[in-house]
Length: 152
Ligand SMILES: CC(C)(COP(=O)(O)OP(=O)(O)OC[C@H]1O[C@@H](n2cnc3c(N)ncnc32)[C@H](O)[C@@H]1OP(=O)(O)O)[C@@H](O)C(=O)NCCC(=O)NCCS
Image (cartoon, rainbow, N blue to C red; front, side, top):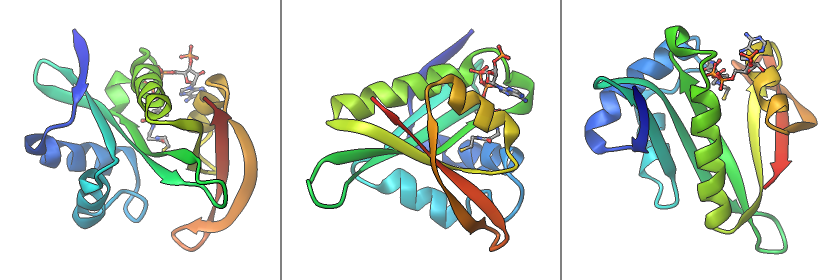
């Protein structure tokens, strides 16, 4: 049975490995990038664990939006191993991260997704995200991203 729990420092290498499976080189995070996002004091990091294997994880964070000082949530990454997909794990991770962002004072959440990542775009649309704008050459200095967001 897969259960969700908070990230622990000893999970780090497994998260790095999962991210390398989920994203192509150049889009997958480097060790330094992953440490940076996990180390931020406002980071929310949850893992989906199945018999001591990490099948997926989510990292989210919050930032002050321009002007009003309102917190804006951000999904930094959401990863589910290929063999564990289409069983609701992504939904559980995303929903819990959104709940924690909302509890921390965010009224919106945003994320970037590569425009060719049709699975993730379909997934986020299913969860109520809409496209705000296209971010030209956001990935690998060549691939556009969609900036998507949702009201919490
Ligand atoms: C996007 C991702 C997190 C979804 O995780 P998941 O555990 O499969 O998601 P769930 O099982 O909760 O939801 C599946 C739903 O998402 C949508 N979806 C997922 N993959 C899809 C695909 N290949 N084609 C169409 N729709 C898809 C469908 O609505 C699907 O529902 P269905 O199975 O009833 O058709 C997973 O595919 C993944 O890790 N991809 C690689 C990393 C990535 O792209 N992360 C997101 C960008 S930050």
